[in-house]
Image (cartoon, protein in one colour):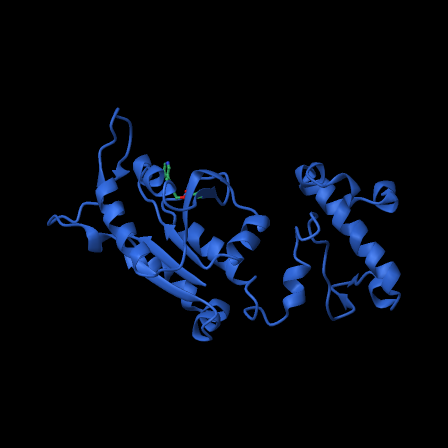
Amino acid sequence: MRIDVVTIFPGYLAPLREALLGRAIGSGLLDVAVHDLRDWTHDVHQAVDDSPYGGGPGMVMRPQVWGDALDAVLAADERPARLVVPTPAGRPFTQADAHAYAAEERLVFACGRYEGIDQRVVDHYADALPVDEISIGDYVLVGGEVAVLVVVEAVARLLPGVLGNPRSAAEDSFSDGLLEGPSYTRPEVWRDRPVPDVLRSGNHGAIARWRRDRALERTVARRPDLLAALPPDALDKKDRAL
Ligand SMILES: COc1cc(COC(=O)c2cn[nH]c2)cc(-c2cccnc2)c1
């Protein structure tokens, strides 16, 4: 998979080259190119923003600069691409989106700053390729770069060969629509707190039941919205008895 990121702060994307993702890039599983939006400005001030039509606070990113940058980046590789624009006004990014993106040949991320990017940029490219305006959460960041780090990590860990243990991606939180329950490791007792006996019983049926019950309890307590979104047959009689 090829990933391109266009940003006025390329340095913000340096963490992509660390650790797990760094190894994925090194092993050729992932190809990441970061581009400085200012490379496509032509004025001495390298202006990427301007005042908003209709007035209002802040600045808006100029369409010409984004158009020149995205035309050049898209033309650099013939693989079909999906353009992803992180924004507070986007559709919520979910684990299902991470799986869908992991199947893409190429992702191009546009990092907005200021109050955002002139809407005509998204409208223009949506005529030529899939364009997703996505949100990683209901809060406002200063720029899209941090959101790109989040999305790229969520996607890259799903790529075959990136995670040491592929099973863990399959048993992710959300993989069965529920939150993951609690996990424990040695020592058996830590600051007078023991590991739940069932986990040391060797009774795999009881352990699976206990884990499912804890996942259901946690989902009910923290994310009732996920329960409501489950398909009707997702919960069996024992689940409902909980
Ligand atoms: C592309 O347009 C953007 C992008 C961003 C950065 O992304 C996020 O903040 C985000 C992404 N998921 N959740 C939050 C921020 C603004 C923005 C800033 C100030 C006022 N209004 C809008 C605009």
